[in-house]
Image (tube, rainbow, N blue to C red):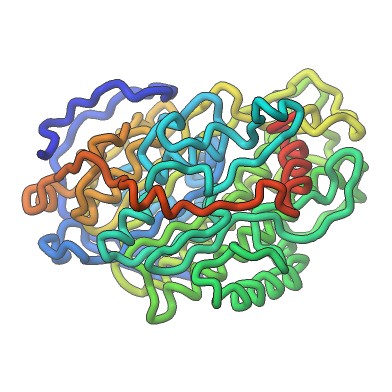
Length: 490
């Protein structure tokens, strides 16, 4: 049966920073036209074939670590036009997240609508009783409940998943799946320099479904690898001063993320430009989180007892801003490639704030002590929804005038998968811990397609098909070193 009303039961394990509620206002009919250097795109909320259960596609744009306190000043300065337009015409808010803010846990909860106790991914690593000193990496084989891509595949919908956490080894979907895996062979160093992750790697099976497309994806990887120097110059410009040993280390520890994101975006654009455009495309961007970890001190030097020099701030104080603008521009390019109406969901797994504020930042220190941005207190993430079937929810004022305190709490990370199912007229699992975000969905859609539920989408037959991999994979040591370089594990 459908859930009635808007009341919600407490959500296990969710923490959030509460913001003042905005006054409910009558939904108004409106049209959005984004005109950017890379984008001309329009939609009319509530107008397009709301009785069609297939309807326009959904783009789930996952930007790790996206933070409202960074976004709003950039929107005010006109540097994030795509995000600004989506906010003005759709529904947005803070996204309650989990503690600890562990990416594998949170992104798997986003994809399943369930707690880690149910989906089985409880962190980056685990140990077994028989080998307590041995560290093992969680993989897709450890997930024990269906993700939204499994549910859509079962329902005959097309879905493609690009770069999502915990998708290696890949599994069959009604579209394309490109897993997040280690990328290239690396030299081991004492402090985690040159550690890359999150993209494709030559010679490792199980990274792409269907497998006969892996060579095509590797070709895209190599193109992006060759273009990485020019890409970083386009995003950040040129640097005027010589890098210190610390800055050299921080910069090199970001390159794997820039390379991975460029690869995922190129694959996503190729998908939506061709005849295989999926009904749901989920694409993951990790660079926003990585530059936040590395360069928060350069963006907000006054928060630290030992701030960077003026020259360092001049060169690296623009890194975070530059990458947020790149993500905004990349989203605009995807929308332009769609060339039609599309429902957009932008989300992050958590926010970010200053850490290690009293440190002197020794370049030879451990990774956790040279990061200046972090999320140990589970700051809420970002959620933005716009497009057909999305309700317009006015904010207290123009987005250019808002502060983070004006951004209301909208939902939790558990609610994204159920909301996608509701937008596609697919029953929501009663065993999910999240619920569809009703106030973000066009009321006429819900009237024509009441939210339905089913006890569970999981079956014994599906569980029996779960992939099994050798836990001693050739990527294991590199992956662990990369996690240490981010300060996620000791």
